Image 1 (cartoon, rainbow, N blue to C red):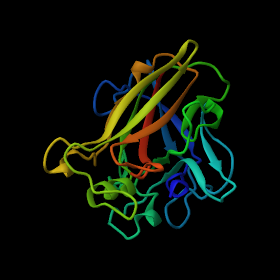
Image 2 (image 1 turned 90 degrees about the vertical axis):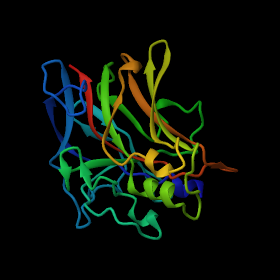
Image 3 (image 1 turned 30 degrees about the horizontal axis):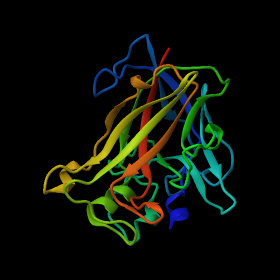
Image 4 (image 1 turned 45 degrees about the horizontal axis):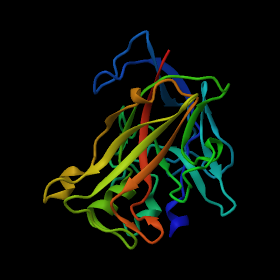
Length: 253
């Protein structure tokens, strides 16, 4: 089950850098920040990046986004897609590229990225071996501003309905994405709740729109890697599918 949860996808995209700010819910152009827009991608007939099953990190402008094709013929990291379908299926694992919003920040059917964290990672794993990471290709430091986040459809339906491996969320349950900044003096962190169920209607607390994840607490970093936590854990660790969707990663110029 652990291996099943670790399958991930990363889109190889040619990006166009624009200027934006993360001070508001909607990006606002400035001359101080830089956003990565996912453009120029070749998709297969399922509206998934056609290179998802190949090895090697993805280079997007100045940045490298982690992507691995493993010895078990599975993908870990990020993948780009533009799938409109948000219906529930059994099993949802067969629809793990989908996002609950039916598209990226630009609207329905526009590109986004789905990431899957390898929940088997040890806490002391080297940055280069992290399944979900971002770094500059030349190895220099950068200062992240934000990234927009929502739930992948697979994780969303697991939390709202339950599945063969994970329970339906109830009051008190939480699903959290953690960004770790690698700095010269150690690590910094920022947290974003993809689910925070504080009422009897737990579904109200599960994210289903694009939301800003403020990364300024990380400061200036040499890299960022992501991990996840859930209140639904078992003998082998986290039961909730370790998936999240991302768009509009933004850094200071």
